[in-house]
Amino acid sequence: MLKKLQKLNDNWVIFYDLFSKNGNGDSIRPLAEELRKQRPDMKFFFVSKTLKHIDMADEIIKPHTLRFNYVMYKAKYLLSPMGFPKKNKREGQVWVQTWHGTPLKKLYLSREDTPKFRKDVKQFEKADFFCISCDFCKKAFGEAMLIKEEQFLPSGLPRNDILTNYDEKLVNSVKEELKLPKDKKVLFYCPTWRRYDYKATLPFDMQKMKEALKEEYCLLIRSHAGKHQWVDCNDNPVNVEDGEFCFNVANYRNIAHLYLISDIHITDYSSSMFDFAILEKPQIFYAYDLEQYEKEFQLYFDYKDVICGDMPVNTDELIDAVKNMQPNYEKIKGFKDRFCTYEKGDAAKKVIDAMLAKNN
Image (cartoon, rainbow, N blue to C red; front, side, top):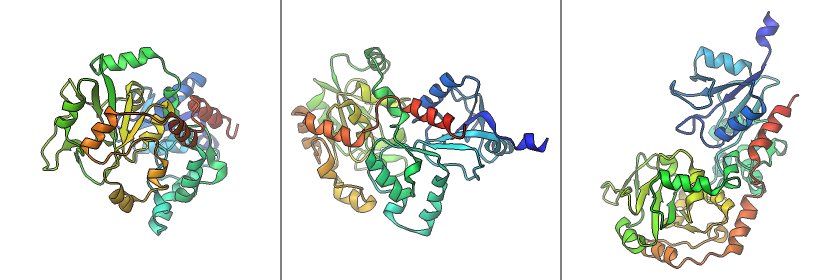
């Protein structure tokens, strides 16, 4: 009886996503879909702080409960897009870390070798597989989190598979759902996280942008993970949804869909630049505070040398960069080849194949 209680359940898998708002975001959803296809007999446990509906979940478990502890003890497989649970990993369990993007700013021990960061990165020793998009990630994650060579899985990120495998029906349906004007090109502004709470200063003059670009473009805006209210430099709310030129896509369910419908991506230091590069479409790098940002966060490489597009620093320059866009497709392709090396559209299958083959 005791042996039976202690035995791992080969049909149980935990999706540990406390990172995204819906509990199955980032790379979790495509992994769940692929695993359901390969192993329809498996039971899917999704971890959530609240007992909300999560699509594809057979059972939702809350952290720090008896049920959570029991499932953690019994489940053979666990997948996470960020951190791991503060639990001991049993022999025979297979834990997969997909992470949530190619790093631009320095992480953990790359920033500072402190006892706290040493303690924080211990969790990543538990990863049997750590997904990466390119060899640059090996250097960055190895230095920052002490990931070993044998842990790396050169699969690409499952969340990006759709950027290779899509059709125009999807593109058209997303545009219709968002009620975008059919005769306009799409700009997508997607900046990184900064040290603010739930207000973010919009770093350009929206009215100027609208007046200059509305005849040819519409503008999608998404704050980091869709978490912030936009304000101007005087802390007054800014309307980023007029149904004509600007559209607030903070709560849209899948950022990859937004990449697909966009003609030009505007970002600063977000890892979205690497995901968007898969599409080989133009990008504008609106790094108006580069010097300040580099001092605060530190970057893994020389930003100006690496980016593959214009770098305006104010509203007028941003408008000019859009209106006079002349993409350097050779540079765009070089950027993609360097940072999206393993993004072939089959990451979810590679991850699930590797996970199921481990220890079997």
